[in-house]
Image 1 (spheres, rainbow, N blue to C red):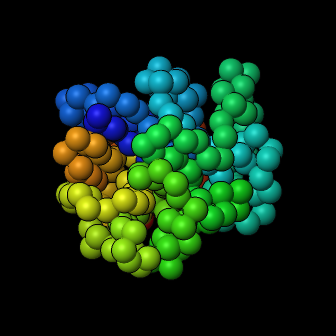
Image 2: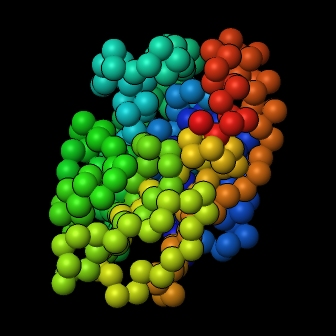
Length: 246
C-alpha cells in the first residue's frame, strides 16, 4: 500500500494542488491529512473541498477546532488569532459540518492519525524531540502514526528491543527504511506553511510493502498565494513568511 500524507494545509490551495499532483504521480492508494486544513491562508473552503474529494483519512487540528469554537484562541499568537477571526465567518455550513465530524485520533490499521501527539491529543501537544516522541510512541498501537502541528519534518522509529526511539536526522527531505522497526512516528511537515526554512510545500509518502518512508518537497506559486492573502486583508506577515519557510 502506498500512503500519501498531507501535513497542515492552512488554507493554502496553491500548495495543496501542487502536492496532490505530485502524490498522484506517486500513485498513492490511500490519502491521509493530519489536521489544520484551515487557518492562516486565504482559501479555507477550497482546501476543505479538496480534502473531502480525495477521501482523506483526516483528524481534527487545533485551528480547525478554533474555527468551531471548541478551542480558546487566547494562547494563539496575534496573527494566528486574526486569521481565525477572518476564517470563522467565511465558513460555509458544509465546511463546519465536515470539521465537526473530525475526531482527535483516527485509527485505520496499519496507521493512526493525530494532529499533535498521541499522549495528549486534546491538548495539541507538539512532538519536537525524542522526549515527546517517546511519550507518544508509548501510546501508539499501530505500526505507523502520522502527525503534524510543528510544521517541521521529522521521523522517529522504535523497535520492541529498545524503548528509546531512533531519530532520523532532521532535514527538509527524508528517505528512510523502517524495516526492523515496529513503531514509526512520522511528521511530514506542512503543505501550506513550512517552518523549516524551506518554503517548498512538504508532504509524505509511505510504501508499506517496501517499508520505506519519504518526506518530499514541491515548488508552488508562492507569489500567487501572497497576493490572495493581501487581497483578503489578512496580516501581511502571513504572506511574507511563505517566502522564507518560517
